[in-house]
Image 1 (tube, rainbow, N blue to C red):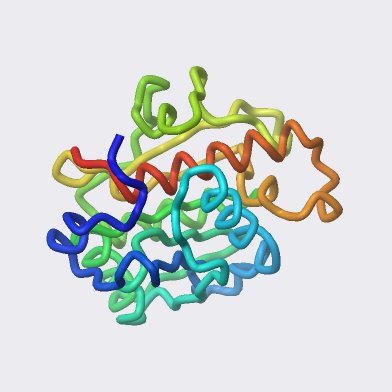
Image 2: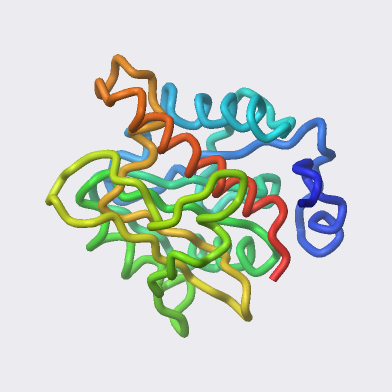
Length: 220
């Protein structure tokens, strides 16, 4: 297993520049009226704390907030996007996200419920030549520090459908992971927000840690 620091190899192969002691991960702010801020207060901060404690990472405890079209996007090796409603990327924003992902970045899209019909066409603007593909349970993203033999855990019921993990794969590399019918981000929040069971929250945090570990270390 590689070191869970922000790998020098990743820095050399991509557009990113932060040193290991200054690594931050970010929540993406987008246009369209959807609630990009749905899990703003505790979700990513709790995941960061869990990763630093259980993976030995050195991520800044304070999440960043980055706009889809900002050049600051390239400062973050892991970017999380969530919400319930509409999401719109302009041509400039779509191109910025594309360059970020091709350059070595990793995007986690978490459907907080109701986002699916909006985010899929927007990601087609980012990668018009690619489709989301459902990842098999054998994919390494499910088998990092924590082992998920049957894929994503089910955190919130919503439509009572099974959770599914989709990916966008560019030139053999998974650049975007989309968690659907799962709601990992809600499971990362403080327990008094959604009143999820300790078991559900632990599963959500462990799967989130797998995403971070994969984004920081995977070489495909």
